[in-house]
Length: 281
Image (cartoon, rainbow, N blue to C red; front, side, top):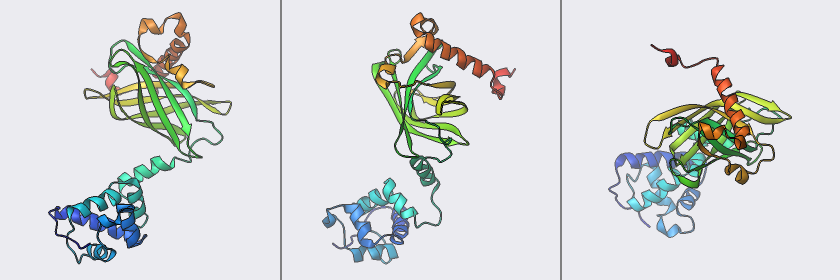
């Protein structure tokens, strides 16, 4: 199939040309076309035509061909990873994706991290309310730790299970969790551990900060505490999760959770570097 003139903006054509030039340093022209079109090679032009485009002998390609090639080599993680293996400098976005995808070997040696945790923090939506979440960490291999954050919310949404997913890495031995969810928080949220407690070879407790964007806009920061639930069943734990006013947290059947919130308060009071704005004015 021959190349066609295209009304695709020149800037986009040049971005694609550079990307394909990077890819061509590592894979063949045929492989570039195969990744873009899969088994339907008839939808793309010939190897010679693609080589002419990469070399700049052809200035533009049709929108249909552009869309297929850009989808594979500009927008997919696989395409970006392949072409950046041959690049002199990996773009910052792909450095971040690679960091999250590869995990981090700074995880404390010999410490079991996978498992189920209750996560405690003050509500960022309702005054005087406190939140119990269920965080499940799964070891996908030696390094990659995936995370699921779940909550039953009958206060701001409904009683259905609301879920966010993400990944855990370690920085200087402290865990960080990046999550994506669309529930009563939006987009990306981040848990940054600042103090950890390891007992019997397992990560038992993490104290840190939880940073989110509220559903209606605006960022929120809350101190948080994760406590490992030994042999915890996430489904059974979810029945205990939710958003509760203070009097419900103090109910006898929630003694375990009340003790966790008491500990969170003590840890927060003893924070070595409080926000100066708390004493401003």
